[in-house]
Image 1 (cartoon, rainbow over the protein chains, first blue to last red):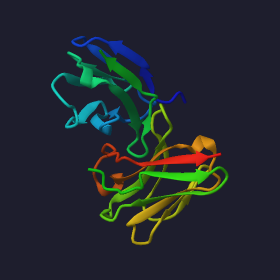
Image 2: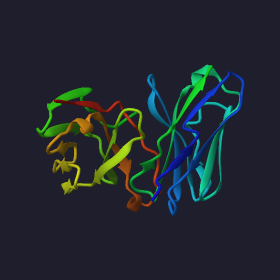
Image 3: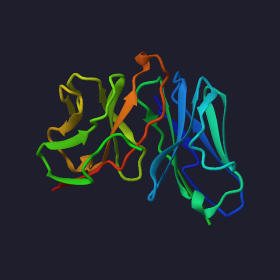
Image 4: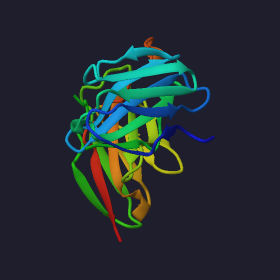
Length: 111
Length: 115
């Protein structure tokens, strides 16, 4: 099993640009979670999906953030426009409702 | 807010047992105790979850007190590769009728294994 796959692993962009992070969950998993990790705030849940449907997006910080899951094998997290305070490591995780399995993360730097 | 309390950091000598405590005094009957760890620059890694029985796998043992208000994760023979932040999290069980929800991470315990 390849595990959760995230791309890109690193992203450097300038303030105001659109950023798209991608996630491929483990095959057969029906839950998908997006988390963000910063030194100040630690690991925070942003949004999660069940069977491709968003269940709870209360952790999404602002309207600049949006997430989609067009099918069971792909999800995106988009930031438009990006700001320096969005710099963080973004993790995707998937599960069958039990233990969550995390991807390696995308380290985002917004200059 | 996280519903668990853990020491901020702990040291342990290589080869010795590392005992990581967690207090979850407000745990509900339908909540499991989950343990994850995060090695520097990697994603969190699932270790264990349990309801009330003690558990053991190839990595560690989980001891949950009878009143379920605290638990201890035990790494029996710690190695340098076990240096990581260890998170204890309580989470509603699927069987209680709801679906899964996201994990609420606290600050965890930074375990440092000394050579």
